[in-house]
Image (cartoon, rainbow, N blue to C red; front, side, top):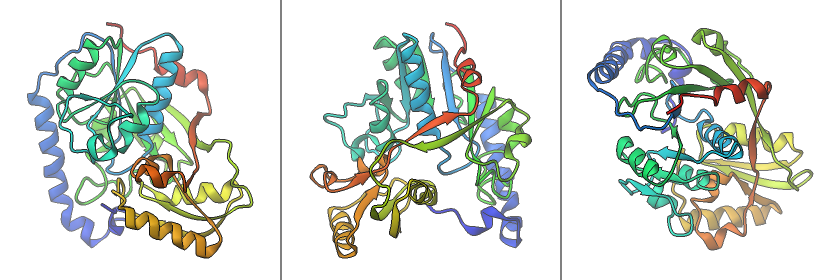
Length: 318
């Protein structure tokens, strides 16, 4: 789903939908108040957001998993598996599972730690703990009350902020900012905080950037395509590393690429004398034999204050 324009500024459409937004927010709050969360017996950290759409949760989850493992821990990641058919609980096997089975993000995260997908967070947590995990990282699920969270970190896309500040469907928020911030320990802002979103949370702020990893794209002509939350960020990063972006093609987040679509993109790139370049998240949604014909720009999250970020990982002891 692409965000409507009125989510970025207040106007007649947003105002007309505002009462529905309050009903949506109150419904979520009522659900949370009625549920007694299940405790996993090991610490649980939730990486969530207050808005619909991509904010950078997955790179943050990957970074947390890497750091916990480097400390000698045995982290496991819990994901809903958005875009996949599996209801779970299921441990992701990158050698057997596809994005159509488990979703694209779980396949990426499985390179960092065991990933368990499923619509039932508690069932996935039980499977992860039984497998030997000593820390659980929730990729999203901040508004889901079924599993007790020892710590929650809110992720904010700095350039987008909180949009018009209204709750869905009047705006991009899943709940009012103050409500969500009251349940979180910190706020990670990725990119420039163009709208002062960090200050509005009242939380400790960790600033980070998604930086391109070493690549051979400087000076290369490229056709860039992406089906992620904000494709524009990917296209801008390509220009930052020195690629000559000849054409861009945008798809919806989690778009399931058909073989014909990828072949058409490759043919267009050939006509332009360019390389077809995409994201790692998009690549896992491409037929395996066509992946070798695509280039990928990898990124990694880097923090302005690494020590402050590491301190957030000393969360609840079992």
